[in-house]
Length: 284
Ligand code: LIP
Image (cartoon, rainbow, N blue to C red; front, side, top):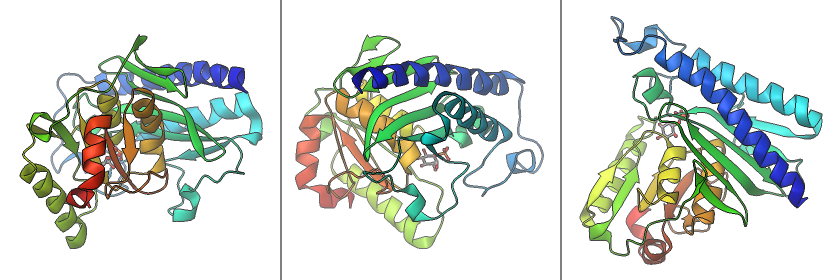
C-alpha cells in the first residue's frame, strides 16, 4: 500500500504538470494585453454564477484528470471534481468504505484566472478510507509545485517546507476569503470574520482568492493562519496534507475537528492553532 501511494504521488504530480500546461497556455494566450470586454468578463466566459465563474479551461482540465485517472486506475477509483459536482452535500462525503477518491479542483482561483491575476492552481488529492493521503497544489503561472504525502513531508519545488514559527497574533499574517455567496447572512458572517481577525490585532490580512493556495502558503510559512467558511472538499483535501505534513494543524473555523466535507478551514502553524483553538469563537 505504501508503494502504491508513492506511485500515486508520482502520478498526481505528473498529472498536475499536464493540467498546468493547459492552464498556462490559456492564461498567457493574450498576455499581457487582455482587458475586460465591454460588459465584463462574464460575457466572454461560461457563467455558473457571476461570483463563481467557470471557464472552458476549468472544464478541459477536469476532463483531462478524469480521463487520466480512468486510464490508470479504471473504474475502481472515484473522482470528486468541482465541475462534475451535482450540488448535493452527500456527494461531498468520502466515507471509510468508499473506493479511493480523487478530489480535484481543476482551477482553484478561477476568478483570478479570468482577471489575469497569477494566483491560480490545480489541486489534486487522493483520499482513501476517508482520509486525504497525498496532495498536490500546482500554480503553473508562478511555477510553484507543492506536494505532500502522509509521513513523508511537504515540499515546494522539491525542497522541504515547514509552517512558520510565529506564535503571537500581532506578528501574524492571516488569510481569509470573501467567497462567492452574496446572501445577506453570508456577507454578515464574512464581515464578522474579518472584524474578529482585525480586532485580534494581526500584522496583515490577505486573500489569494484560492483556498488551496492559502493552505499551501500556510504550509511554507508565508501565511501563519488561514480561515474561511465555504470551501469544498476539492479545495481543501490537498491543502490538508500539505499543512499537516509541514507541521501545522487543520481545524474548522469554530475550532472543531476538521472534516473534509465540513465546508470550512482554520489552518495554522501549531503555536497559533493552539491559541486559536481556545479562542475559536473569534472565527466562528
Ligand atoms: C475559490 C475558493 C475560495 C473562495 C472563492 C472560490 P474556485 O474556488 O478556493 O476559497 O473564497 O470564492 O470559490 O471557484 O476558484 O475553484
